[in-house]
Image (cartoon, rainbow, N blue to C red; front, top):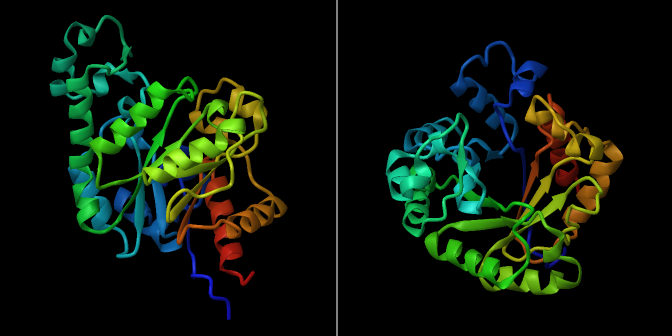
Length: 302
């Protein structure tokens, strides 16, 4: 018997409510309410990533309901609100208290107006409101990672490393998973980046993406006792195309051969006692189909 510690693998998707998933037939006719759909999803998977929190701050009530509707061992990973990762935010999605702290920037001039929350007072309020809304999940022991998906313009430089330290200081008791979308963090700098994350207890997000010069090739490595793998699909044409539905960008169904190869790489991860595997190819039922297959692969004896 090997002396290696047993690793817990959790597999899920980056949404349970995407419109194309609802249309796909994954849910039975009886799962016709928000509660029933989450309960059905949680009967098949033990984790999920919440994407809606990127677009608007979550509510404490929703966190409470999510905790109530899922099994005791279920984990929610919450995508950080866009303002926390330096993305522009639709003005109408900001709470009044935040808009008041932005001053003249927060005066609407056109529909769909976006602003960057760069006032320190407004940003700190966003952090505190974000954390407070998640308290029911935290109390229930169902809060996994807070996923900080940074934009492509968030490049590897000292100023941005300081911002990561700022995020860590704002949420000192939470587990933060960091996803970089710019290649400058890796390549020759990969060792430094991984060491930086490890020293701060930050989780390195391992990405599977379409092969393209503008996208990062992230090392398959862990920087914490938890590893986080996000599988976005490999449809290069769809990734860079224009679509009416955001889900079209992730229109990719991994083959069994690709999933087997990925499962082998996931099994070779060292340093983590728990691995989160999240399928973000949320087009139709592609994500749930791939996640079910991956669950079986990771349950098999190596």
